[in-house]
Image (cartoon, rainbow, N blue to C red; front, side):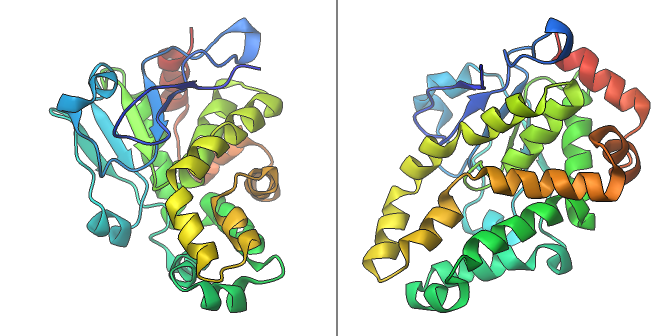
Amino acid sequence: MQCSRTVGSSTVANLRDLGGIAIAGGARIRPGLAFRSGQLDRLDVPSDPAFAALGVRTVVDLRTARERAARPDRMPGGAHLLVADVMADPAGTGTAARLAAAFADPLLANREFRAGGAARALAADYRAFVTAESARQAYRQLLTALAHKDGGPVLFHCTAGKDRTGWGAALVLLLLGADERTVAAEYLSVGAAVQAAFAPLIEAFTAGGGDPEIAEAVFGVRTAYLEAALQAVADGWGDVESYARAGLGIKDETLGHLRERLTA
């Protein structure tokens, strides 16, 4: 089953092109228009011809204000930055902030997230990616940017490019008509890249006494997380089409433009 194509960037981790993924009716996503990645804090366009060749015109940053301040994006020349903070609503996504703070202190993480607590926290955040007001605003912005007829190539990212970005990619694929097997395969495809990018942090955490299961839950890509988001869609809206319209406020015209622009 075909997943997104890895772009061999030397300065951006987990950079992938959604182009080529099979969707309904024998169609495929057009290459060169929708990219996903980790954060762009190390982007160096002059020394990264693979990235430069993409011609990115819009960057959708799904990270929090704190993440953006700590590691601001290095923007490619001429590109527009769109801030779409999925986790701005602390009532909906507070577990991730707790988890990030605890991860800096391995012993604290062990106390707070032992016995599967980290995995439960991640699953709770995936449900919030669907239901929290800030998340719905953020993903409305992402879909609108991707549907813009003259917007050029769009890159969307969070920190690692697996959770907020992973749900964003899943949402796009579902709305374009990909089946759930394809969506799950794309979601899982980034696991190795994330593990490689964060290997030093994972090693430091476990060397400091942190439980390896917590590290795997935080930096792993698990089908159960994606299923938590899909269940939240089903519970609240029934299906992804209804979620896009009623939950995100996406107009039929925008959905039409999204499909026309991204499918071939």
